[in-house]
Length: 281
Image (cartoon, helix red, strand yellow):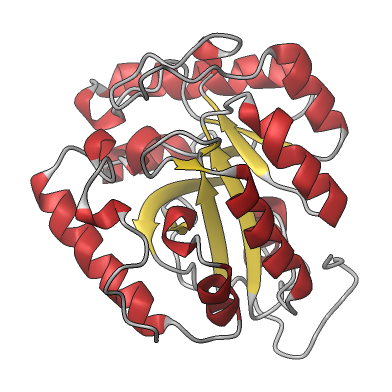
């Protein structure tokens, strides 16, 4: 694990950070589900690599003049706080000495998903007791609104209510500051991002890319890890290869975004098929 006291050659003020995006670690179908054995293999590849795992706090601090982060690093994130995180993902992370940030839609804690794009059958979210326990074991929790809406479909006043209430609820339950946010479906207009910036230090979207030194902290891109289910492909990417595959995925993602609602993307589509016909580099 990377330490803030480390200053490796090539350390940077926030460049070259791959923010990994997960949702559910389960055997369900669709791009928001990854089998536990696949997740474990991905994390083992990461732990065996020379790429350090940092936190969103580290990235924000580096941008604010704090200790620089390594020139190549990884942040692990999960959207929606499904209860399979506690059962399936956390034991793998704990065994390998890794941590993560989990974004919580606070109005559904302890209940099942009901939002657009929910799985069938719906997946259950962690309860507050589990969330507090995981926070005590080093897992960071961020806000993901209250009701998991498409923020851009709401009036600005309602958007702000979703931001403020989700942050306040998490802070009340955790007894600590909540500084990080992820908008549902990655959807946030410039006006929405300004509202997010009034309450949070970072916001993770769903744009497929690596975060660089100039990336907007209120619109950080992430890597959809469904596309890296092959341990060999993920290992090659961590070694600095696979840019051709990433560009190919970005192209498909862009085409898909122009045709399909964000909550339907990756559900049985070409973009949800992780390997076939893909370039190797």
